[in-house]
Image 1 (cartoon, rainbow, N blue to C red):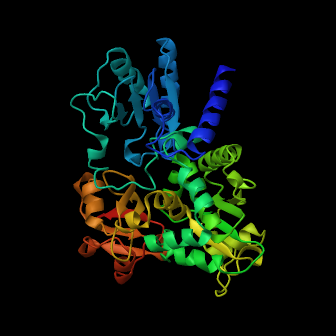
Image 2 (cartoon, rainbow, N blue to C red):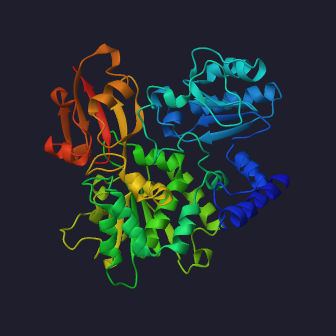
Image 3 (cartoon, helix red, strand yellow):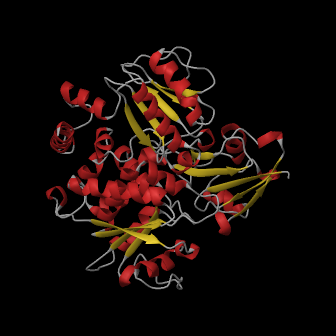
Length: 482
């Protein structure tokens, strides 16, 4: 009962004081303290964060969680356990973070169940950091640092990255709308639908230089305007989460680790094009992503962030989930539309393009997960900020999934224009076992392979096309000499 009162109290506080028009930096001292607690930056009990995305669970995080609960019960320690998504360093899973009251949060790697007792005993009982486990610590103002531990952002895997889409993954609780709002989520969205016209939102996104992250890289704002300008009694937005390329797992990780970012991006996008109904077309093979997405949608409805007449603006939006049945061809947008309509998932000739003649014959915009997950940051920080990242014709960052014969596998988010060599050798730690690099397959079945002589290629849309490859969704499968 006490927990329910606290949840209701938090909801009332967030809706009235934060979502109701409060400005970050202008909150009262009392509100700031409360927000720090909701963001888990200030706590009066130990907190244990466990990477529980698909990759973490595959590496044994489920058994690690059981061992943590057993340890806390045996020693009668009252601590909070928070399951997060993947931080990106999949080769270090299971990843466990520990935050003691008043101290920085520390991240530990490869914490299998047999290592739990020693780790927790050292940190929670002896107040020491054991050697051989540490990835780094998260410095936060007002918390004491652990001496001798580096900032996790200085870790070789994370230092070259610029995390926009992945900024919350592995750090925030993916099924807590309270934590997402306390960290600034949904504030820009509500401000947008109250103060900007749909056309102005399209202009902002077009000026940012954001291009579609799912394939050919068409300018997102220009694409939106095609649907925006088409007269129709109904328009649709579709999020393409049918991630079928071999070696690609970016969309899955974003939805598992930060589903509210996708929901917010979809809401802003739907407003911009004039859509009142949106779909997330997602693979049924992604059960954890599906579960967390559905929770996020329920929470957003409960907070009045989707539904009818949102925040009294007259804008209404319903977001539906459609599960795909594993057909690779349904990643193509017209085949995907046929599947939602209940037809066989087969592509059709274009034109007409979906932006003018799409789902049920109505104007329809289809963007992939990463494209939509960029929208909240663009709205919050402005188009000039986003356009300052990347290259002249490829703006912002790109998330790549690294797999194959490399030392460190996982997800990286780097500015457009970063070289392939920097990713393979500086971020991923080079070829496993000291072997020689042979090639990397990029862009899935529609992409190509980049050989050693092109290791210094700039990873942007135009450079890859010139080399006979393509960005695609961002899967990088590295091959060694064997």
